[in-house]
Image (cartoon, rainbow, N blue to C red; front, side, top):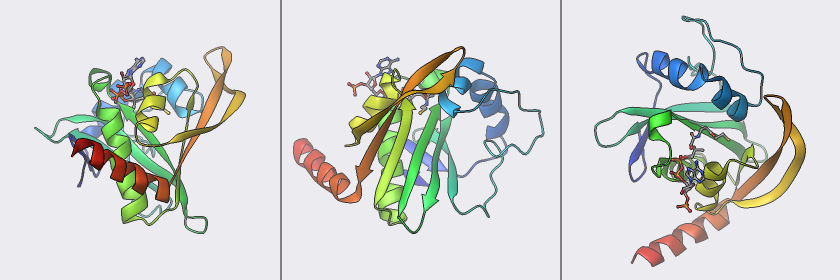
Length: 186
Ligand SMILES: CC(C)(COP(=O)(O)OP(=O)(O)OC[C@H]1O[C@@H](n2cnc3c(N)ncnc32)[C@H](O)[C@@H]1OP(=O)(O)O)[C@@H](O)C(=O)NCCC(=O)NCCS
């Protein structure tokens, strides 16, 4: 298991699946905003890759996220689009409703950065999010991600086009950011 300050990123367990389906993917508004594809219901028992992990798929690493204290499931985190030539990948995360706004998002992004940069040796990580998703933007920026561009009206979300923001973080900037944070805590 990967450990952040308060979160753990571990493999998907069978018991996680009904909780994630009910609390994340059955939520039409959250799914429509977070997933970049039209919402449709997931049939119980389906092998939908958002729920059932295929360990043989190389470019996509999904985690279940738990509270380190107690092990309660609080959401999902994914390193996806892993490109071993350009040494880049994308980050995605989704917290169960009760777990939002408690600082976990920032901790999960930090833990995914450790996985991407240190464990996988990547050079660049990227996040795409809706321009009005303040919690996601802040979780990224607190870890050193910088806004690199706005994709105007790029996302069709429940009846309107919304802007998306692209954020990027390079390995060397992440190391500097980590050093600066450690100095600030000292
Ligand atoms: C986006 C998400 C992962 C962020 O995680 P989180 O744990 O809720 O965020 P945090 O508690 O770490 O908050 C990070 C910052 O955002 C702020 N914030 C949190 N929720 C907020 C909200 N609803 N509105 C405005 N600001 C908010 C916090 O105050 C904090 O700001 P600070 O850094 O200035 O202190 C989580 O809210 C979530 O899963 N949302 C639904 C799914 C989603 O949007 N996924 C991302 C798709 S790209």
